[in-house]
Length: 161
Image (cartoon, rainbow, N blue to C red):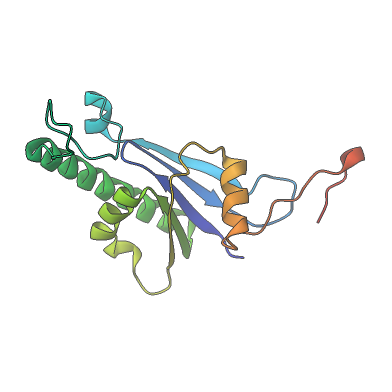
């Protein structure tokens, strides 16, 4: 497997990792950037769920709030793609794995043109993994054959292949 940039994204938060397959002495994922959506953070709007008008129990969307959230999410998606692009160039990475909630993945797809260049492999995973630790993220992506599995410690301090 090749070196990669991994982005774990939801509406309020994005963590960017670099992945180095390798010698089994170091963890494969290293957190490079931790981004927060300023609009979602400032207003306490962390959910990807649709807005409802006050007193509406039938799921009717409050269009103004919905439009505002869409704009916040799209702006954050642009910021995330810009940081991914920067990390790819800084580290000379040719593989990008974007893991995002369904709604944020849609927002990211609207602005991901810089990541769809020749020489960059872009994999998308539509899931909410923001709550996982880096080893759990690694294991999850390895189960999907996107990364090499982590080496496991054996009794006596040895490592399994």
